[in-house]
Image (tube, rainbow over all chains, first blue to last red; front, side, top):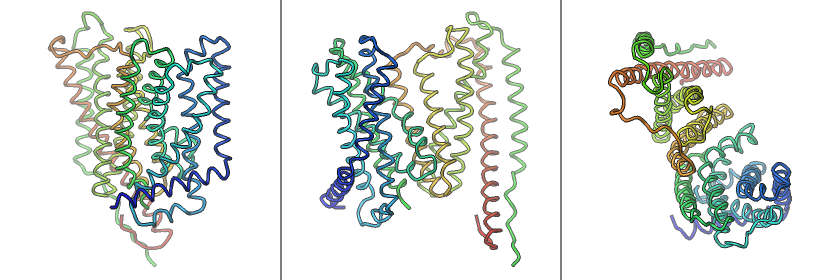
Length: 228
Length: 237
């Protein structure tokens, strides 16, 4: 296996997925508005007291990321299934896992873009001190999103091809994400509060461990999931 | 054209005998534990849930270990019997883990004063229930036998890997659970009754697993026969 050739395959898949998305924008806009809508709904549910919404904000942000993100994973395969292009993709020579890595990176780019708009919006709505540790908050968002998108891309490869895919994907995915949710929410909350207890670091390490384990496992298992 | 089918697999006689014996042993050991041991010094009669609760939790974990084992074996050998075996264990494990949670709740109410707390063991158990509910849902939504086997094997393995991670993360998050009693702090009679029940529960679980495995094979044979009739030929399962 030549790494350079695999890398060019991965890049081609990322390019293809992101270009399809960029040319229509329909999905990005819909998911983004859904995310902002969810932020508003949480605001109505917990507000109007600023203190209450601020203390719940880390949890609200991550639940919104999960709810919005899960909408986009199935689509990344549905697009392929509709045109019958998944079969073509599988026929090309090379490693199956390049398809997985390509889809993972495209989904990651998509989710990070949504977060790039949605998190500042949450900062405005809930009056959060995002400027307190912008670098580390961005790091937590990145690490949390990597784990989320890895498992999301993996499970969507199955869920997108069965009946009841809308409910099956979150049913499979969310229980697996509980360690990630704990790590992401706790570290975000700690950083927003100034991290006086120095807790954020250990939760960030948990996110790194989670990411490494599931990237490895999903890469190993993907061959079995996609083969036809 | 005349259609002839192979006769469906029969449940071996020793399994039925084994089942009858395990049921008798289970009832006896439960009766012994309930009526034959004195109430606990601190917890009184509520402590007797130990003889049901811990064995069902143990069996549930054993069942999920079996799912992971069957899944790995299927991906390695590609023999559908391993897949059916894993599925049988997953069904049993799901029922038992639900029972474990209900029993724990019943015990927690008089002991801790609440039906539910977010402690690591409780929470991990509940998350396992959800993971394996997802496993069973995926199976029921996937029609193709071979695809279902591959997919559920992947989900079964990844779900098992997640269990320790969930446990440690929830433990960091919060902990107030009753610390496991070591054998030193437990009187011999409690320990003997407990271990006896653990053994009889395990035997009963093995019987249920064998029977469920057999039923699943009958289902496969029945499906094959339906297909045979539809196309008018013989299919070997």
